[in-house]
Length: 319
Ligand code: PEP
Ligand code: MG
Image (cartoon, rainbow, N blue to C red; front, side):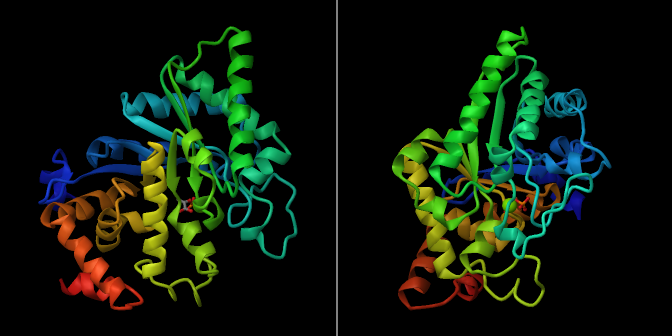
């Protein structure tokens, strides 16, 4: 199937009415990186750093991580890579960390909550990222931020480590951008100042959807119960994009749904201009986007909403 889309690789995901959608890829292992050239992705919209922690039976050392991140940046040849700090807890349990016995791990002590309460690992990771850049730009973001002060606290850690690394005589990144994942409905309604402070926002649709519909993404009985193209979810996404646009903050969508062509089209129709997905999805998504008129898609979605439809899927598929 890949070669079917090979001819699209170097073409933009431009709709018939001239909207250009940025196509980025998700990654987490060194083995993913050759896809950056093969898929035509413009960069890595989500680098899941926890995979490097999950494949080991001990905590990786700062030096090891710095070497891995440096190789990621080398392989990117100047394309942008958005590193996400460690997202552990919930479904991602490290074998060498004391398990926490929580009744609802997805709602529990995970990701940035761990990072802020026990900052040792996060600080080590930030040091490794700063060293890995060797003067190149750095883009780092935090997982599972639920309110403004968590973002500010994470950001302060980055500033502190930059100062510390400078004092130790390490070369600092040429530019540092600090962003966040938006994976909780609460963050969608954070104050304007939050949106202004973020250098970029990446919508983590997998978690955002599970929390929005209160339906466990790991639970087969409920995980497909609610349609991503439900009008309520699309309105949530649209509102987030509007708040980002008003603040001048770039926003991308990086959950699995970004790699599904009809979903990607609907996100674009409500204003999303950057998508990040597994590399194999870039061809199919681009192929559909290049064939559609986005303002027509938008009209179909608006009409479905006005007619009280629960999901826009059927109207969009029939259009
Ligand atoms: C998400 O939640 O949408 C996301 C991209 O992060 P992960 O799937 O790693 O939780
Ligand atoms: Mg997530």
